Image 1 (cartoon, one colour):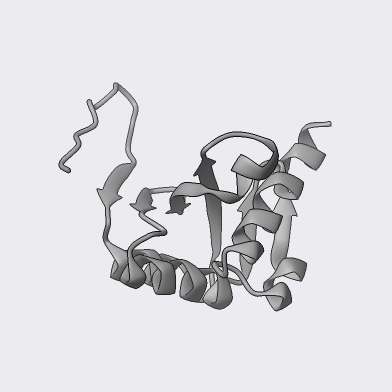
Image 2 (cartoon, rainbow, N blue to C red):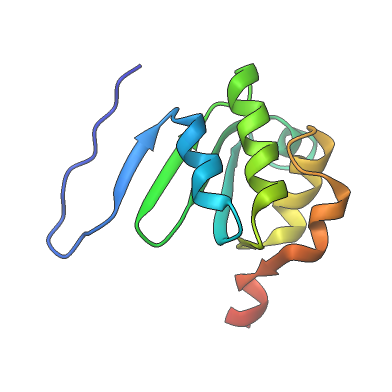
Length: 117
């Protein structure tokens, strides 16, 4: 599936779909943002449809049902110095429960929802 994004004035970010190598490279020793899209709430929160890993300049969208992408998500989380999430209590259990993040990576999580409150 090919998707495109329309350029917006002032937008300097780029987007990549399915570039597992880029996702890992972005994370090596750096802070990265991680966001998930799920099938819904409750038990459906554990059915992850997509994972985005991004820096200030680029975001990579990965498919957690693809084996290469699964390893890239886990490697990126493992190699990052900081994991930035918004509402981490929702995302982290799903990531860990699906084997996309190790328990040992949890101390690296920074939750922007805490900052917002």
